[in-house]
Length: 96
Image 1 (cartoon, rainbow, N blue to C red):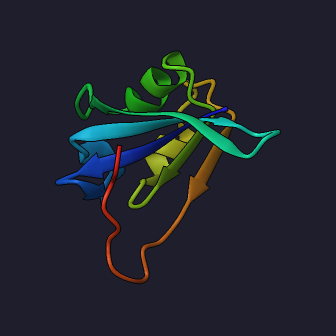
Image 2 (cartoon, rainbow, N blue to C red):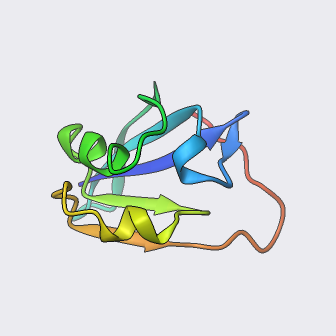
């Protein structure tokens, strides 16, 4: 399964749509093992673009902070799961 996390300045981005990069993480769910991690540039902020683009990259789950309702309501994506998390403590650095 492939996960995506928005990243800016080397940490989880506080605004999904304006992140600089996406961390893409391939996980073997059965073995609970990370197979691959990569940091790819965001294609930029446009309404209804990012979730569809992430789905094209093979992403099944998006873990994000600061994702607006518009991103959830779009019909242009086939991403199967969205997890909306809040950062309650310090930001954690992205390590590829």
